[in-house]
Length: 430
Image 1 (cartoon, rainbow, N blue to C red):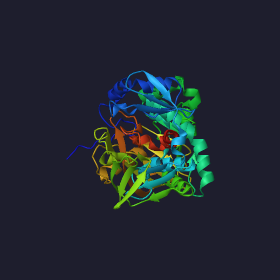
Image 2: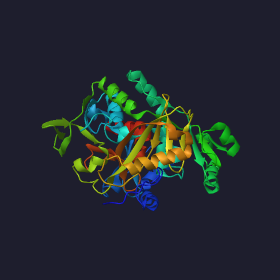
Image 3: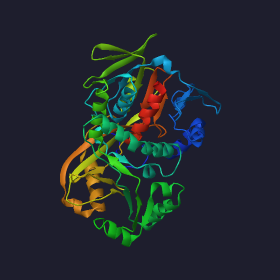
Image 4: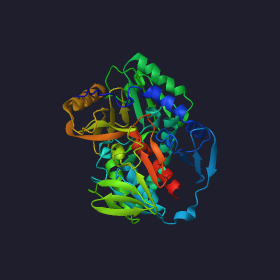
């Protein structure tokens, strides 16, 4: 029986991840160079397949191909090759549905397959937080990806809302990261001098200011860092809106339809699902933690793994105006009085059970942060298996055969990176 450690949400999924992250970025110089150039990257796939080219889509619509070496060459994708490409998408979560909408909106003939309902996997257990300045405050490739991801949201949400009447919450209400020790306060306060602090809208609150702004927070807190740029989206309804918007653009979405295998033929990529064969010009694999099981190249077997996350829903009369964050949990307040409490981070394989210890740890942390939540109504617990990657970066771009694309390994940043991922994948296809 594996030992389950209920790590706080900001911890890395693997013990070696902090060192491995820096080490792997150095092995993938194209990422750092392209970030310095101000380009939006599709993360290099060369860490998965050492001899493969990595792909980066730029704002100008070009595609940069680069190998493990620093040498690079730019190639414009010939849009005449696929005026209306047939694209199969394996995975109906937030990533798959965002890609489906983006591709369908550009005129692709899209078909989505999922073994469950739309958003039935890791997506339904996500709190929908959009907070790059907490998730990747140390800087680096993931940080720049996350900040770029947040920058996509306003325009992307406006497009989706104009394309569907499915309602969903999207609010940029900011975050408040609370410190309960002097050491933690010093760490948080130091971020105010970061190069990106002004853009993020950071502000440090001393104990008196914190008490005025958030009287419901535990009394022994010694300060808090607020970030006005952050927010959240109600992920389940947002994903349903994406699926509906894609469907209105003639995308076909097959739920309860598991994919058995993917085959590469001379004229097409074939997806075998529900005893039928479907032929496509390209296939995007965004099946999350299940990607290795259907990867026809076995390139992701040791690179993607499931990390269980448990999320609790409460109903409360406590008015919490911002997303609250402590070292033990985060709280996301919805307009209907619901509060999402997340999340555990557990390396337990494909075990999707909710556990008493996981729920208890979240409730204890929530009540330690906001004592009045001890009288909140317990609504439910949700469980999802997030796709953790071996170096903490998502896998985005072509497989060894470029007619197959990966869009997976987002771990806890899938919601944040969904619009950016969709645009980059669509830029590559077109």
